[in-house]
Amino acid sequence: MENEWRNSKLSEYVTLISGGTPSKSNPDYWHGTTPWISAKDMKSFRIEDSIDHLSELGVQEATRIIPPETVLILVRGMTLHNDIPICKTSLASAFNQDVKAVMPREGLLAPYLVYLLLANKPYLLSIVDSAGHGTGRLNTDTLLETPFLLPPLPTQKAIAHILGTLDDKIELLRQMNETLEAMARALFKSWFVDFDPVRKKAEGLQTGLPPEIDALFPDSLEDSELGEIPKGWTTDVLGNHFSISKGVSYKSEELAESDTALITLKSFNRGGGYRNDGLKSYTGKYKESQVILPGDVVMAFTDVTQAAEVIGRPAIVRSSSKYKNLVASLDVGIIRPKTSSLSTSFLYFLGNTDEFVAHTYSFTSGTTVLHLSKEALPSFQTVIPPKRIILIFSKFTDTSMKSINQNEQQIDLLRMLKDSLLPKLISGD
Image 1 (cartoon, rainbow, N blue to C red):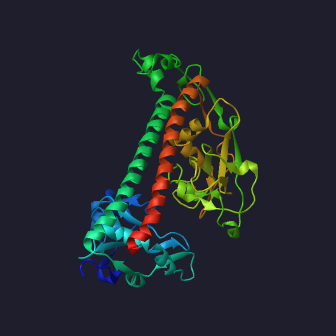
Image 2 (tube, rainbow, N blue to C red):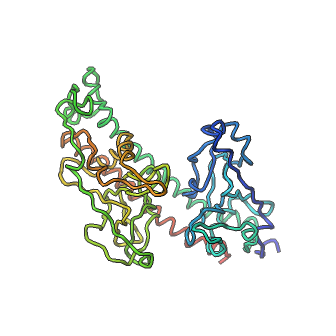
Image 3 (cartoon, one colour):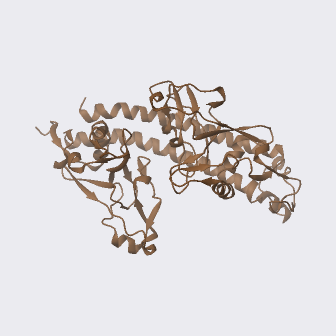
């Protein structure tokens, strides 16, 4: 009998713990070091950190502190007919009332629990209650009645190991991509923001660069409209070097299964960067100018996050293993070079600088939905380095972006494998 799977329901094997929100009007509760997880943090399978943090005083006001590896489920605030976020926190955290911590009891292994919930997403989506609003609520009483087959502990351990190994590989590839992009960002800042090679040469120091690259940098700075810049370099507005193509306006009935997908606001990470899981299948018409190729730079022109973490932020589009064609949606602009003096990779890393973010924010308007003026990007003035330095920088970053793209393709395949194995393993097939 101990090797048999048995019919069970969640209420027999889990305890739900509620979170809370210390008063937002008391600044003494906030801006500390303890993560405070809310719906806006539940965007990926593993939560590495949160947007908001509590102080020690705020922790005392919070209802619970949960340990690392706790499973979290969003029970209020998800979009109807969309995903229900199910995540694991990688660090001790507090959380708000829109989130429930799911704590396993005896007979249910914690590593298995998260996959049990993930496998039951179709059922969970079916019991989301809209209550007449645009966002859904997952009734906790109904949630606890979720039926499932409970395997014996050794089988739970084996299933969690198989799926966990896939997740570990996905996480490793994701971290590799973060490192590759961080290296490229650091190089851009060193060469084109801080002018490190020029400053070192001006001080008689070694730049550490290969001789053929070292020789391309001058050994002094000169005044310009933007302050001190390397001697011989120029300044110009981006509108003289890049053009913007706006995306297609679409109807909800055109979001049907297809080999074409729209790149939407969900294709942008908070703070910039590309997400492959934000694509929407699309069957409507579009212009050739609205087609996006891997390697193109896109930018968000609207934003529903009041912190303005998406609007004006660039992303480099990667290839998709699921869709043949990619098209920009109305909220997205495609940024293309008009000249050969600046590259798309230069623009992408320029778009991640504090100066560019501050500039685009000053061209942002709106309350509930933020809108970016069409003059934001063209009016930004920047340093124009010599073409040979741009080519060397672009060669390095293009290699990094190619590796990132290859890693993302592996991640897509691993996720597809996980998605196909998950229901079979959890159901006992």
